[in-house]
Image 1 (cartoon, rainbow, N blue to C red):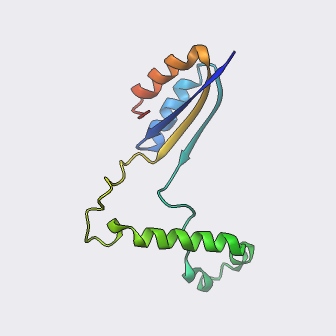
Image 2: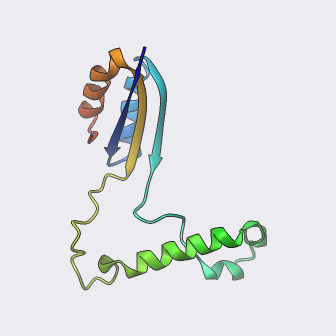
Length: 122
């Protein structure tokens, strides 16, 4: 039997969890819920040096530190960050929760219907 995948975007983790519970009654191969952001990483916080959390500082690799710093620079350079612009690119839709589902082909249409009824955007 072949498999089909579904990528659905939700406004809240609770909406995605509701869809996940309903989908578990189908022939699901794999399923996950992830929050994503416009920018990678968790941001760079130079104030962390003064927090006393030296274990997390020691575990940072130079590459991870550069990635986090780059993400902070990207966020600060965004036109919407200054408050002086409307952003211009349409802005976020508020759907930052991704439900990824892999189902057997014979359950695909039913899974799509469940996701849409739960408020997911395909």
